[in-house]
Structure formats: structure tokens, C-alpha cells
Image 1 (cartoon, rainbow, N blue to C red):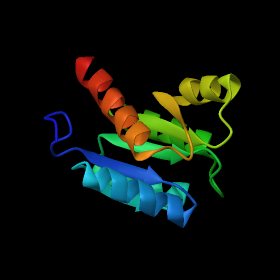
Image 2 (cartoon, rainbow, N blue to C red):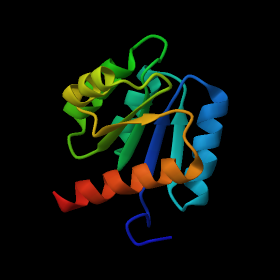
Image 3 (tube, helix red, strand yellow):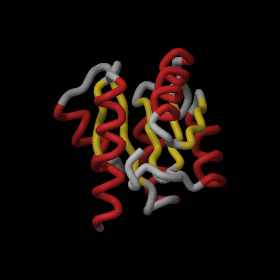
Image 4 (cartoon, one colour):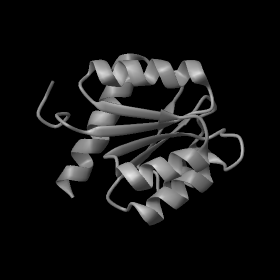
Length: 129
């Protein structure tokens, strides 16, 4: 584990249980502390309480949309990095997510390597600011 990952908390918000489990396992294996939630309301509450370093948010959440969750997290936790996730990545959706407060958009399903590299890059960018 590189020093940038040591002790970092990641929160995953995704309606799909298999995706939550796979991402949690891959990120935990990389040395991150990971918490996962299936909906935006619980994810926002947990993020406010836990103050994670990075939050991964599915764009297609039931209830609160991924954009609503990103916007809320960005306003509540401005120092937390936020990555939107979607199986339908487009330049337009990425622009909407970034305007809402996301630091980027990850295409799903992502390999373990791409997931870890994306999280690491966002952490590095936040530490550099």
C-alpha cells in the first residue's frame, strides 16, 4: 500500500449489491477502509457522520438521484472527493456530474485496477490542492 492510501476512508453508494460488494472488496484489498450503502439518503447520512476521503456514487440510484447525492455531498463535505459511477458514460453526463460537484465519472463495471487507479488519482489531486 502506498502512503497516499494509508488510513483513507472510502464510501460506496450503489443500489446494486453485487457492485457494492465487489467494489468494497477490491478497495479493502488495496488497504482502504470501506463502507457501502444502497441508497442516497443512507449514503449522505453516513458520509456526514464518517467524513470519508472519497465517495463513489452510482448515478442511477433509486430515490435521490446520483446527481442529487453528489450535489448534497459537495455542499456538505467540500473537502471530500466525489466520483460518479455509471454504465452509460457520456460527455454530457460527465459534465453534469462535474457541475454538481463530482471530481470525475467512472464507467462501470470497472476493473479492480481502474477502480483503484481512479480513487488514487482523485486522492492525489485533492491532496495537491
